[in-house]
Image (cartoon, rainbow over all chains, first blue to last red; front, side, top):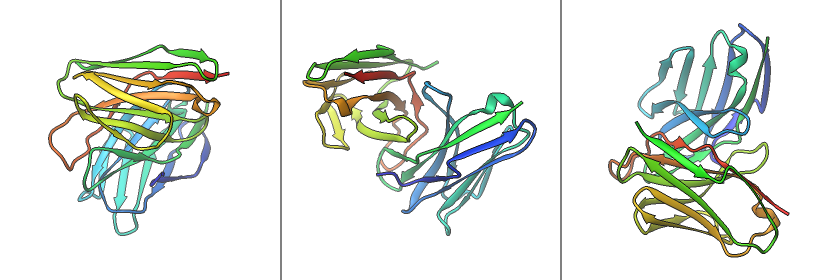
Length: 111
Length: 116
């Protein structure tokens, strides 16, 4: 079963705008990760945020985590056409060696 | 550097035929290995994972099986394919530094399976 649920399911923006995707989950986590998938390809790891962290940056990416609300957001600033892809959040439980993925957000950046 | 290979890239198989998908990892030792399936427009469903040779955990009961005959080789098999087995199969690896923590995963290019 999927723990993470992304919102929105699809997002279409103009190049240069910011894109925000949200992820909600249900149980306690050890960390939360965001991945990107270009059409027909494997997933690429973007960023990992631990349960004791509230915000993390990587280039144009900013991830926040609110464990009290069991939610996370991924912000892509100054989007580019090349950012067009599906974005998934994945949660790692406090015990174990596996991730549970959400259904993803499809992002389309128009040039 | 580490690399992960999957083959074949695409596969069309008739219902009832056997299946064997292979995944190998280079440049790391004793990785955790994972098989996922992705239906069109959907998220990833974890099928199997392995923390060591011969150690397989099954997440979803189905007509698929997995084996890890070598440290960096992970194989997904079926004796008789069903139409519902169609999908995009992804293999992934992660470092294994102890129980209780899940690190980032690195994915292969995937295998597109169509069962006809």
